[in-house]
Each structure stands twice: as structure tokens, then as C-alpha cells.
Length: 627
Image 1 (cartoon, rainbow, N blue to C red):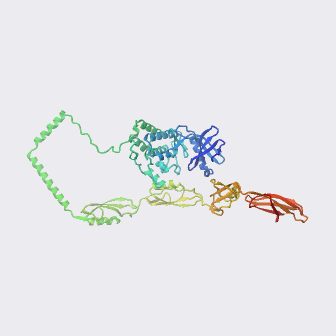
Image 2: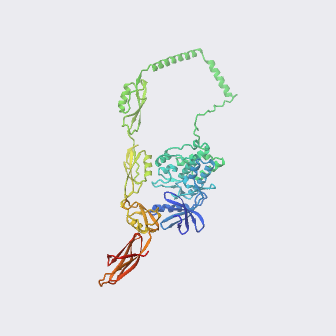
Image 3: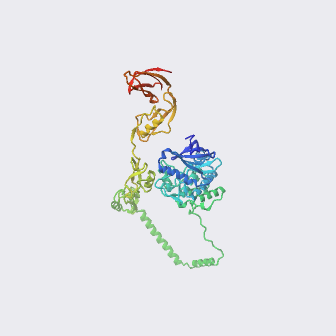
């Protein structure tokens, strides 16, 4: 692509990078004489209408935006089979590169970057566009600190603030919102969650959730709380932490209403004036505290009356009453002594083992040991219904007779509905099944009708009942089964002939093919190929070649002398050359008289051969070198 002129206007200067859908180049707008960024759809997707449509939709969605924190779209076009978008060129780096270089960013810088991201997204949201892939890789930072949000590659124009994601989870898993991870409806609040993750990473140097697989990370977004950023970076103030955690709240209703509100709170953080909107209840709001007692107003008439009443009651106590109180205290003391003595002297018994036996048997054994069973019920996929799951105290414990033994009795396995994930994308299906309370296993099969990476079938079937925690087996499509073909021999032929032979074999010429100097093959002819001729590959596979840049073998000129048969007839003469350029006719066919001597100059490459034909019969001739 380097040096190409797209649309007769944009000269490709250098490659900047690439993603899953497109390759990004730096280019020069020859009409306006300015630097631009050109995003070119990868060649493997140009035949896919869905990808081309999505690519065009990106330009249509973002072109109507005009905001200092969003990369501007200048043009969209097609040059032959090349689909491209022309964008504003930004002199700077993406935020991911900055975080990798510095780790934790200074608080002021991180807050300022996050504020600019929010302001750009707020403009997009107000124009009905949701980014859905906010991450540091898509945030450009200029040398003077200006932030530009880019790559609205999966944005969609919507009539309201929400969009529906049809079974395909889009975006980058470390920056997913919980609703994206579940494959549910997403909207502006998903972008706000992702901004919270980006701000978290800028301040701590790490993303809030890590895992060995994308599914493990997605599940943490759904179920786990992030480590508070202040515990990783003490420079994060409590008010700033509240902003992050509010943006990253699992419940969308608890997040910021829009990106503009979050931007305003970030501006207040920068100025030191924090909004009450970010002041959430402290974790110890209801912790134990000392409460003030009631206030007594001294000199009050009612207080004097109360004191007088208490004095009168004291005077009314008679000796008989005192004797009665003492007697009652003695009686209570005696009863207490008897009760304590009886308790201390209760015989001890050993708690029997009643786990994994039927409840009726467990009750009988406990009664026989003078113990009292108390039961509760729980679902358990391992223990049969009506059997004891656990006991407390455990077996072998020494306790007093009549002690209560708590028994947990199995209700058997809990049966729940298996979600129907047929024809859903693999990751989305795995998350849905896992969230429903099942394990997942996979197998792959070729399928001519079901798209690659999509669920063909599941066991148990969707919308049926199965044990909670059991395994749902998903069969994933590998797409149509490829057909094996043999690689043709294309060494020693021209590029156009090689391409034709590969097309005939339903193979593809690798665009990364190279060139090298060769004295054996002329310029533009195939020197080597990979895989080798005769290798069995799949239809559509690529064949890499090396083309000769010359000079190739030396040319030779020879004089060919031949005498026509002396039979009184007219004869057809043809001279054919066989060399590295292939087989070609150097002379004829032409008519000559009987017995006529013919002498012709023939040019061919060294190590080549000459053949002479009279009336289609090969005949001997005399060859005299000229050079």
C-alpha cells in the first residue's frame, strides 16, 4: 500500500498499525496538502457484505460529530476493491502506550484525561451514538495534552440512548460493562462504566479484573467488586475513588446518568470542590457509636417533685417487706443452685455419625442417644433426596444428653431451566449458560450452514430442566469443511500465468510474496513457491512466491539452416524455442518450395532448445551460433 494513491487524492506514506477489521496508514491529502489518517478495510473482509456495511456505518456515524475530543472524519470512499475512511491525523500516542511507559499516572493528569474522554463521549451520546469499545487503545493523547476519542468502529446510530447487541459481545473484555459481558442491552452507561475502568487503570497502573481466559474476566465484571483504587494508590482521594466506583457500579441505575455529569464531577475534583452527587454513604454509617443521653434541666419543678416522691417511697418501706424480699432471694438462690447442679451432673453422650443416611434413621439414632434432632432442608446435587448432608455437632463429639443436633437434609438436586443458546456466538453462549448456574464444555464440528464460532447444538436442549451445576455440552461450528487440493507447479512461469493456475486450483496468491535477483529466471517469473508443488492443502489457502527481478539467463542468437524435402511439393516450416520463458514459435509456420534451403536467425535464453518442424514432423537442422 505504501506509495499508493487512493481515490486519486490520498497518498499512502506509512503504516501506523491495525486492528481486527482494518489497517491504519498515515497519508497525505494531495488536494489540501495536509497529513491525514486512512483506515483501510482488510482485504479478507471486502467480500463480506456485513463487514463492509459495518465499516461504512462507522464513517456515517462519526462523520456528523464535531467535538475537540473526538477524531474528525473527513472522507469515506472506495478505490477498486479497497474500502477506506479518511480521518484527522493526530500527532501523539494512544493512552495504552502512555500507561505502559509510566505505570500509574499523576492524579491531575489522569483526572484531566478522563474528563476530556467524558466530554467527547457526551457529545457522541447526545447525537445518538454509543461507542461500546472505550479503552486506552482508542484514546489518543496529543503532545500538548489534548485527548481524542477514536475508533467508533462498532458504534451505531440509535434513536434513543440504548442499543441492542444481538447475541454477539463486542468490545475488549478488560473494559466490558457487566451488561456487555452478559450479552444484554447496552447504552451510554456501558461507555460510562468503561471510562471508570480506564480511569482506574490510569491511577493504579492495572485493570480492575484479570483472569486466565476472557470468560473468567467477563464473569468478574458481572460478579466481583474491584479492589478499591485507594488501596493500590494512596494518592487517590476518597472523593475521586467514589467517582470511579460510581461509574463502575454493577447496577446501571447507580451509575452516572450521563457522561456530562461525570465530567462535571471530575472538573470539581480538579478544582477541589467535590459535588454532593459523589458523596456516598460511608461503609461505617451504622457502626457502633456513643450517643448523647437525655438532657436534664436543673431547677425544674418536675424534677423536684420526682425527688420528693422517691424520698416518700423510701420512708414507706416497712421491716415486714424487707423480710419478704430476703426470703424470696433465698428461695431463688436455692432453686438456681439445684438447676446448676442438675445441669452439671447431666450425663454425657457421644454424637453418632448420621451423615449420608436417610433422615428417619438419623432421627432414630439421635433419639436412641438421648439427643434432639433439629432439621433444615437444602438442595444438593451430590446427596440423595431425604439423606443427611451435614450435622452439627459433628460425629464423635462429647455433649450433654438432650443437646440439639442440627441436621441439614438434602432436597436432592435443584433442577433449573437450561438457556437456549443455539445459533449464538460461543463467548456469549458460555456466559449465558454459566450465569444460569451450569458448567460448560465444548466440542467442534464442521457445518455447512452454521457460521463459524456459533453454537450448532447443545445437550441438554435449551428450555429443558437440568441439575443446577451440571454440565451443558455445546457443539461449536468450525464452518464448512475445507476440501483438500494439490498445489500446482508455478515455478518458471510469469506472475499472470501463476495467478491463473492458482485460481484454477482454487488457491490464493499470498500478497506478502517477495522478489529477489535471479540469473536463472527472467524478471517477473516465479523463482520459488511455498508450499511445494504437489503439497495437499485446503481450498482458499495461500501460496507464497518469490519473483525474479532479473537479470535472468543470457540471451543467445543462432542461425538455423534447414533444407525442404525435394519431392516436388510445397511444405510448411515452423521453428519453436523452448527455454525459461516457456515454449514459443520463433518462425512460421510458413510455406517453402521443394528442396528450398532456409536460413533463419533465432533468439533464445541460454540452456534453451530449438526444434524445427516440417509439416508438423520434427526434422534435423544445422545450428550456427551468432553470439
